[in-house]
Image (cartoon, rainbow, N blue to C red):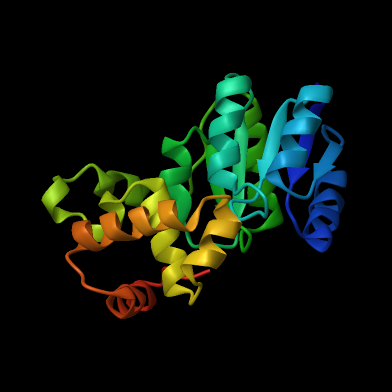
Length: 212
C-alpha cells in the first residue's frame, strides 16, 4: 500500500499531536506537515507535496471554510478532509459545498478517522450515516429549510459570532473585514431571517446550537 502524505491544519498543538499519534499506528499514513492556521497551511501546501489535508474548520487568521475555498482554487485535485468540533448539522454541508471531500467531528472514533482518510485519499467522498441523512434532507424544497441554512457563508459566520456574544469589531478582526462590511452582512442576515436586532439573532443561535 502506497503512503498517504498528510498535512494537518489545526490551531491546537495538542490536537495536532493527538492526530499524529493516532495516524502513526497506520504505516501507510504519514504526517509530513503541520500548520496552526489557514495562512500557514497555504504556505506549506505551496512549498511541499501532500496527498491530503486534514483541516479544522475553525482557525485564526483565515477560517477553515475560507482556506478550503482557496485550496480548491490553487490545488483543485488535492482532497481535503474537514475535522471539526462543531456538530455535522452546523458546518458539514457548507464544508462539502465549499469543496471538502469529507467531514468528521472530533468526537469520531480513531478507526473512523483512518477509514475516512483512506477513502478520501483514493478520490472518493466520505460522509457519516448521520451526515448522509442531513444531505438528503438538504435536497428538500427551499421553503422547508430553516432560515440559517439559506444564509451565505459570511452571513452564517456573522450569525454564529453574534450568537456567541462577539461585537462587530471582534467579528471584523477575526474575519479580516472592516466593521462596515460586517454591518452589511448583519443587515442582510437580519433581513433574510426577518429579525430586528442582535438579541433575536442570539436567541435563535442559542436555540439552534449555532455558537462557537
